[in-house]
Image (cartoon, rainbow, N blue to C red; front, side):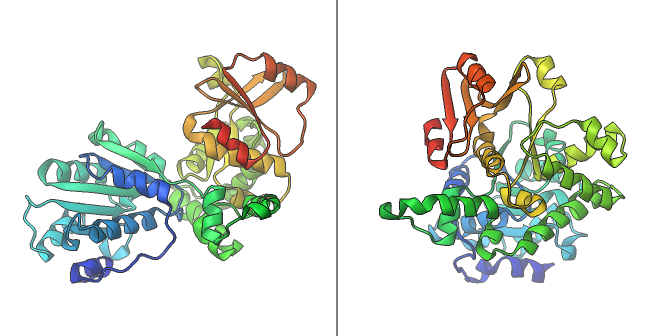
Length: 389
C-alpha cells in the first residue's frame, strides 16, 4: 500500500508541479472557502466532470500558499483495485505512519470516489470524531451519498460540479471574443450547444469520449452497483429519455414502449438521475400537483444529448442549457389549460425560453402576462441570463 500512496502523493517527496487541467475559478473558490470550517465537504457530479482536477488544484494551492506542508495532505482514489482490501481507516493510518504524523497533528484528506468503500460514512464520522482532519470527499452517485449521510447530519457541505457554462467553454477553448467580433458570438454559442460542457470533450472534440462516459456510467454505476442485469434495456431507456429531453414524460408510456413494469421504469429513471445523467423538474403548484403531475426531463449535458439525438431543435437545446444554469435556484414549470411556461423560480420569477425571435403562442402570451409573478423574463440568448442577477 505504501508504494501506491506515494504514487498518488508526489508532494510527500517535495515534488509539487502544476496539476494538469484548466481551472474553473468559481467552483475552486467555493471549495477553498470551505476549507476553514469543520464540516466534511462532499464534491458531487457526473463522472469526468472535473472533481479530481478540482481536488488536485486545491492541493496545489494549499502547498503553494504555505497553508500546510505537503506531508500533511493525503490524496487517494478509492476505486483503485490495489486498495480494494484496505478500509479508509487503514489508508489514513498508513498515511500517518509514512509521514510520521501524530493523531493530534492536523491533516487534509482528499478521498476520491469515497462511495466505493463500504460503510464509508461511519469511517468518516470516526475520523472526524477521533482525529484532527479536514475531509474532502467526492462521489459520482447521489443515491449512494444521500442514503448514507445520516452519520454526518449537519456536519457536511455539498458542492456539485456542473458542466461548463458558455463563458467557461470559451476559456477552455482559448477563445476571446473582442467587441468588434461580437457577431461571432452566436456561432461560438451554437458550437457550444452541440459540444456541451464536459471538460475533456471540450478540449478534444472526440465524440467517442462521451459515448464511453455514458457507457461507463450505465455499466459500472448502474448495472453493476445497482444489480441491473439487462444493460441493453438500460441503453434503450436512456436513448428514449434523451429524445424526450425538455418535455413532460409519462412513466407508463415509457414502460409500455420497453415492456417494463411502471415500478421498474421509475427505478431506472431514478438511477439515471442519481448518476447525474439526467435531471428531473416538477410542476410548480400545490403539493398534489407537484407529486401527481408529470415531470420534465433534461439532459445533464447538451453534448451528451446531441450525441444520442443529433444536433437538431436548437430551441430545445437552448432551453436545456438554461435549465442547467438555473437548476440551483429550484425551478418548476407552469402548466395551466394545456399551456406551459418553461420555468418559475421560488422568488416568483417567471421565465419563458425562446431562442432568437421565436414567438410566444397567443395562449402562452396570455398565461405569461397573467400568472402571478414579481418578474417576467423572456430569455432569447445567453447574454439575457444576466437579467437573473
